[in-house]
Length: 514
Image (cartoon, rainbow, N blue to C red):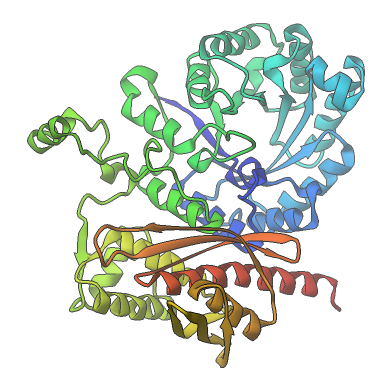
């Protein structure tokens, strides 16, 4: 079967979307999981855009791009030669580096954004690709806003950059303007008209402004495209990118129709989706295809009757195919470390040493409070514990006093690097009081911008998962925490956000220090 290249842009286009920004540590964590997912290309960032994005791209190249069987590590750059130099400095550490350079080719962009002629843009495109090829063989070129570009002019640019050495030509529907049949025809015409197109992989990058991103990407395959640029959970600018999990599972489920395959390990999809949600603090909508909470849920009586008799009546995929267990009840308070370790491995968490010790303690604490511990509990618990790295503040003790005609107050004890710190606070409610106490201990004042809570599992003893966005002196970061006690979960979520800003401050201090 034909092989489709899965180009993941979660860390670049996805991370550019409001509310989805990630620091270097978080990009590394996500990149490692994308490598386990076995995507072909990780677009790690836009190095010229900021020092932090340069550092994050460089560290992904160094730490993930050098592993055995590592994906291609790609950086984005405009056609300016300085952009390309900066991009190469970031990605050069990877075993397989790629430079992805782009420029707009639509008359709308040329007139109002670039204020350049068609001839100037064509010349800059060729010079950029030649400059990039001096660094590495793997160069990709994108004519931004391809769906609204003059077709003949765009083809002239594509022919010229292929002649200059581009080995992937990516056709972006930058503003989500295309419709599937129209898009398929456009890709087919490009393959007919562009000189030397047989030397390059034809790629597509589709946005979801009209809800057509996945449909357009799949339609392009039928016209010969063999790389799809996409993002986990469909995140990205405005309405997002084509959703990686939807594309991969569509190709797997309907391989009878498409006749192509990917190298993605689909059993890692659910974990990857949940990790992204945990890092960004943005929940996946319940009815999201493939990875949403309701993707394998059945409530209507007719559907339930059918599924009980034969799952194929209403399920075209198995939850196990995406790494989601259909066995809900897992462990209890009498379970041991070996059983927990084995179940976590099945869920995609290979913990050992201190990490396993912390997870086991947290599990036993949870099991003492719950009659039944579900897979979702374990995922929430472990991802919460994973944020408590070296140098982070960890919740050690919490006592809250609240009620009618009582001023809410809280006493909090935090632990960091073997030391404990304690202070108290008052507030408009118990959560506000807890956050005030944390601010008093850390000396870092945050302002809560957004607060959301949901039950990670069902039942009166469900684990509550709290997501927050906090403004620390103009920098807004997200955090997540889980517990059967929602006030404790709130404290953990706030600490998660606070630790992110503390780590980022520490990184900046090291950068400018001696």
